[in-house]
Length: 131
Image 1 (tube, rainbow, N blue to C red):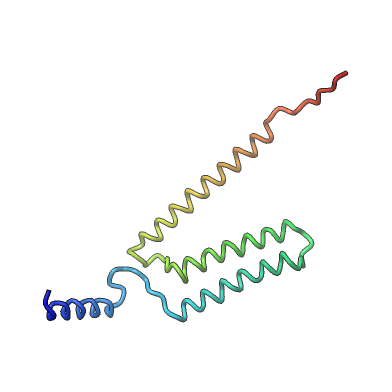
Image 2: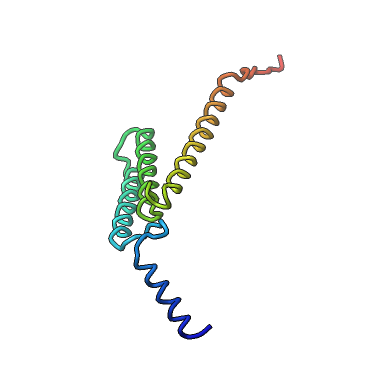
């Protein structure tokens, strides 16, 4: 390869990178990453405080709130760090995410349904006494 060829290749690569989202991939900014970091820190600190200080009387309510914060934190990570939105990569990333969520909902709800019905429909255990 000649030096002129390398210079032409480097120039073409630099020009391509400057065009923006030509390949459909989203690129983050420092502001976006800092926003995601602050949100993730808050979404971690609040549930930690709820569990450690126990301001709520109900453990079940605390658990539901912590799970809610976890779900929101998943969304924050996907949006700010993984750059998943309907526009990235022509929508294929978002469609794969929707498919994954549907499969997970079916698997988890089916598992819970089967476990619940197995628990309620099992024969009662009879105590066997030696008399």
